Every structure is written in C-alpha cells, then in structure tokens.
Length: 137
Length: 109
Image 1 (cartoon, rainbow over the protein chains, first blue to last red):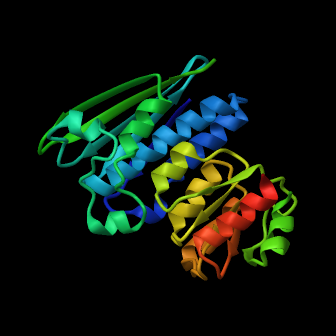
Image 2 (cartoon, rainbow over the protein chains, first blue to last red):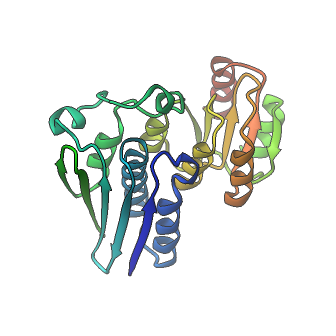
C-alpha cells in the first residue's frame, strides 16, 4: 500500500494529516498498537521538521506485511551538521515555531527512538531526505 | 475515573464534549509538543497552555482522550473544529498548571 502527501512550507495548520491518514490505514490493517504509535510519532516529527525548516516537500509511505517505510523528502536549506541536529536539545527553529511549543530539539531524537532504521541524506542548499523504517512484529 | 468525573471534580469548562465516558489512565503536563508526542501514554489527559490546532492533532494521534487548557486559555477556532472532527475533549481550567496537576494527581494516584 502506498500513500503520498505534499508538504507546504510553514503550513502548521495541516500538520499531522499525513500521520493521521497513515494511522487510520494501519488500524484498519490490524497493525499492533506499539508499531502504530512508533510510526505516527516518527512521521509526525518528520512532517513538522519539513514544515518548519524546508521550502516544501513530499511524504511517501509504503506499508507491506513486514514493514512500514516512510520517506520525507524536502527542498530546503539542508542540515549543515547532522551530529548537532541529532543532539537532544539542539534546535534552529524560529521564535514563532518555538512559541507553538516546537523547537525543543526533541524531534529527531524522537524519530530515532521510534524507528528501527533511520537514514538522513542532506545537502546544504538542496534539501534533506529522511528515510524511516518500522518493522512490524 | 472517567473524563466526565474529572470535569466535575476539577470544575472544568467543556468546550467540546467527546470521550466523556472514557477511562483516564493518568495525565501528562507539558507545553512542548514533541515532549508529549514522544512521552505521553495513550489514555492520559494532556494539561497544557498551548491553544492551537496541532494540540488536537497530537492528542488524536497519541490517543489522549482530553486536553485541559490551563489559566482560562482560549483555543483557536480551528483547534476546536479539529477537536470535533477528531473526537478530542477540550476542557478549560481557570487555574494554573501546578494546581491542575496537583488536583489530578490526588484523584488519579
């Protein structure tokens, strides 16, 4: 099963729509609650990251018997230092984004904790592609 | 302890009736959205002063039956609309986070 969603820069109002659709699909398929939780946490955080930092992007989700693969690809500024970005508490979010309760530097650590595989490909000035895999029990 | 019981015991204003008979397993207090996303547990009530639409998105995604907005905060219009669509109970307390947490802790512990 394949799902695609567009990400619009700064569109926080629609944040969570992709995660919500995927959650519904997983529930419908009878996927276990822990895997659903891990998937929606990771996908939501990646979606928020792209909305907050990138200039637009796309989410592709593939669900099969054994795993859920989520690819969030953006056209954006890229991440200059991935080690710093992965550090809990590190954030480059704007004051407006922080006012909403984001920008605590917990997004990428949340993704790492809730996925079995995480791959981040990034090029400054070009964009970032985050590939997240959750294996189903 | 159901959502309805908590509304009565804490004298909360209910802006969107949903999950009133749902059993509450605990509570999580935070204004950082990723903190709630990563650490809240399903069945918990979320105590916050955030009042925008992403609050209902997270409550729904993490199966949190109700959100208690503290200090008389007013939720954004689209947050309330979203709460109706997603069946999230929206409650308002005139008290601050500390008082709400203290009272909830007493009745849920």
